Length: 355
Image (tube, rainbow, N blue to C red; front, top):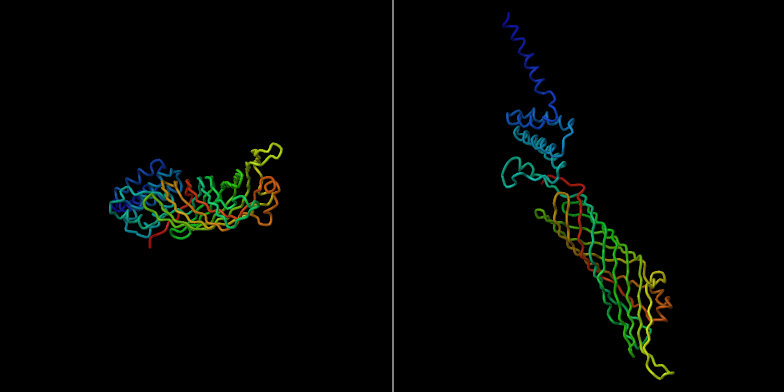
């Protein structure tokens, strides 16, 4: 009779033991207890305990990472490849820059993580640098037969600064949007007879928007890219400084006397001498270094344009330039070479299983 009583108690004891074993573990002991269970081979309890802890405990990012790694190792021990892959995806979603403790070591855990490829999906940053414009004469105009209006334009380095947005849409191909502010300048030195010399300097500011396709080739932490696209630029300001020096015969004194006149910040846009918008084709090369979610980059871009910057209908409208300084614009376009440095932050990543 007593023996039968003890036999009846066995199921109740086992149920009580199981209930005790599966009861919630205090959050502060969650990882320590789970690691002990893992070492003892109780993988099912490790997984259920950590899954519940991830939902109910306020774990730090590092502790969540440790919990998912322990769950992945438990599923590997249970030989559950599908559940292992799901947990690896969760780990990489939490920590896209997770690095293997020993990447050179061949192990099932390493192989499980190496099945996935993690790439930046959306990056936003800033760019800044220098700009070298090259003015190209399309057609020559003149108002003085004795002056050389065909002389080449001399460029001065300018500046460029803006925002960079990059969205990867297919493998290593991404769409880049770069709204920016650009300032360039050039000068003309027109010479003529009798020590006649006109110095003309223009500073042009524009707001640009470029759209480009970029292919990125990653090598460890480095990212090399080639890009091509279209640039739309709108001139916001165009100002000119002019300085005219010449020698003229003075009939009263019967001598050749020097004369000089100058004007600063003549608004070429308000008098209609500049086209409002122009377009360019862009080619570029980039190199970057990725550390965590931050990417430091250097790039060079070339803008090629055939759009004439001179408004032909208003070529003769500035009486000050035309009659006081004998200045007239040639038809010309501007190509630009830009060197930019930047810093980007990766806000979202793309996680894909290798095919």
